[in-house]
Length: 234
Ligand SMILES: [Fe+2]
Image (tube, rainbow, N blue to C red; front, side, top):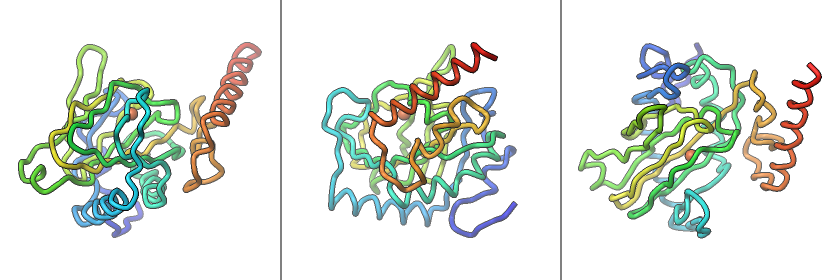
């Protein structure tokens, strides 16, 4: 295993360091996956961007209403590409990277119950950092995952990752009570699944802007039509 000394701690992704079994449970937790130094640097970057240009979604129809979010940010896409091999190791799947989002949550934000679209077969959700008072309080803002007969609150400290099946498991967060918190998701699809066409979220390469939901939906319907036809004929 090639080890880069870049703050992404590859050894944390080895199966004996993961809590849970992704395939069996639908999720697993990777404690201390990213170094505190790298998390602190990215947190400063996200705080600067939030100050300069708060990119807050204002629609009322979305699980992320009122939350600063950015799709395909160049730094986050670099993480996405870099995380491919370690996430493959932790899940046991061969994967294509699809998309990244990062979020600046502020007091009062909540993440409504939802499932992700098919680009998110495997989601790596990461906490980069929060305001000092919240961090000192040793609180961690849980993301709740709905499993078959119960829901699990997953508490992520700075640098921890939870891997979960984003398009299968309903997930949400309750109201945030700190000042701010930076979180990101990095999403993948399995190379051997019907969703493999969602490589790079149908963009020509990572780092490109979103192709737009109209074009994305055309690709989605076309791929599903072809898969359906294949099953009928095969
Ligand atoms: Fe989600």
